[in-house]
Amino acid sequence: MSALPVESQENPLEAILASVNDLAVLPQVVFKIMESTGDADASAADLEKQIIVDPGFSAKVLKMANSAHFALPKKVTNIREAVQFLGFRQVRQLAMNAGVFDMFVGKNDKESLRRRAWWRHSLDAAVCCRWMATHFKELSPDEAYTAGLLHLIGKTILDKSNPDLYNTVIAAQERGVPDRVAETHFYACDHAQVTAGVCAKWGLPGELVQAMNYPEPDATNRLRACVAISHTVAHLAIAGVSEEQELPALFYTWAVESLNVADNLKEWLDAGIAAIAANRSTS
Image 1 (cartoon, one colour):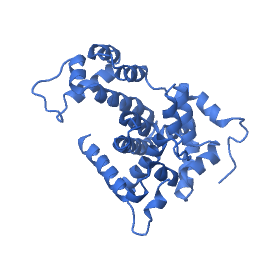
Image 2: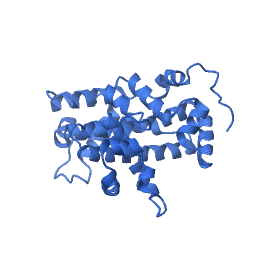
Image 3: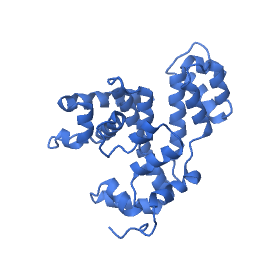
């Protein structure tokens, strides 16, 4: 690989984060909906006020409420009805999905193709995170879902900051270089660092921010461990496991130890893949 194009920058991570205002900002409606759905005193009317200011998201809420999946006897025609039917949790998930998805859209087919793959992986990891969190009292399934959904945002931010440079990252990966190694070589920071940085910039909770740097060991942070394991499960849900591959070697050792799942790793993998498959069949 050639020399770092960004090696002259004093702090490349800060430089990339400084451009985030122009590259990727979660829509304000997403923040407002996250606040409302996290407020125990909020009502359907309160949430309706946050939704109706965004026509695009309003349409998504009505479309979901009227989807064949729910098979309602009559059409839902207003946002408050839709919120009452779907529930806060479903609306919160829809808001996160809609807000984050917009960041994974490319300017051309080549960019869109890789970003769609990152989006699919993020969604699968989110589903696995939520399922895993139900087995640990200290983890919130909703927060775990958000963590899984956000954990690859750094990739699309790096890509948007310099698409041509990310082409070189992809080329290095095709030669067997790990993604974070290639990203660090060409950008002087990797996607996990960027994700954590941008989540901090957005003012997201500290525990969620810390979980974003999922490749780095932190045995005390079970949310980070959940993301690390779900990241691998989402990958294996597509790639599969060959007979010659040793399952433990495919996972982050520190995360497996943190969640104490070493003895049942195959069962966790199978169940996580099943959760992902079930979600895909209904989405």
